[in-house]
Length: 284
Image: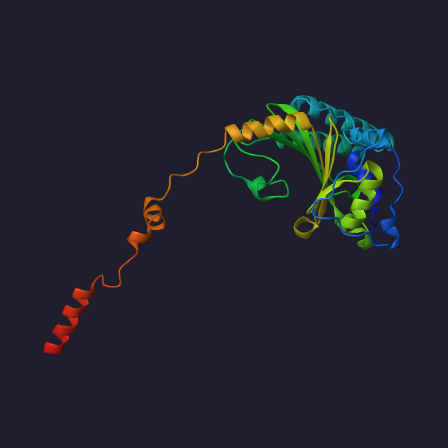
C-alpha cells in the first residue's frame, strides 16, 4: 500500500520546522467559500509574524551562495551521521557516505546564473521567479529522501539570498487534501487571513513576504515563496533598468495602421487597367 502524508506533515517538512500544526476545519469535509478576486490581508498577530519568520529555518536573507551551501552541508552531515551510526555494516556506512557526498555535489552543481541563455528553467514551475541579465542566480536543493519529492529553490540577487521557493508535491498527500482550499485553510491558520488574488495568497510584514501559490493543474504542486520585501524592490528596479529595449517598429505595418481617412483605398483604383483587359477579351 502506498503511504501518503497529511498536507500538514508535508508543510512542516517543507518548512523544516519542529513545531506542530493542527489540521484546519477544511480537512473535516467542510467546504470553505472561495477566495474573492482580491481579498485583503487580515491583521497579523505576533504569533503570525513569528510563524512567518520560522519558515526561514537555518537560512537568513543576505546569505551568499557559499553560506547557503554550508548550511545545507551541515544539515546533510547531521542527517547522515544518524544513519551511519544506526548501522554496523561497513559497506552500508561507505554507501551512505558516498550518497552524502553526491548530494552535496548535486546542490553545488545546480548553481545557475541567468545571463540571457534560455534553458529548461524558462519553461518550468519557477519560470516567473527570475529574469535574465539582472544579477540574479539560483541554487536548487532536491529533497527526495524518505519518499519526499520536493524542491527548494534559493534565489540570489548580486550573490545575496533574497527569496526561497518551495514546491510541495501533492502526489504525496491524500486525495481529499489535494485542493488549494485545504492548503489555504492550513496556511491561514498559521499566518492569519491572507490577501488573495487569483491563485495566490500573500502575507506581508516589513521583514517578510510569504506567498502560497496554486500550481496543481500543471505541476501537481503547491508552492511556498518566502521573500525579503526590501530586496524585492531592488530586484524590481534592476529588472526595469536592465530590461531589453523593444524591437524597432515594423515600418510597413506602421504605414498601414497609421493611414488617415484621406488614405483610404479608392474603389476606382485600377479601373482603367481592368477596363483594358475586358476590351482585349472582346476583341479576341
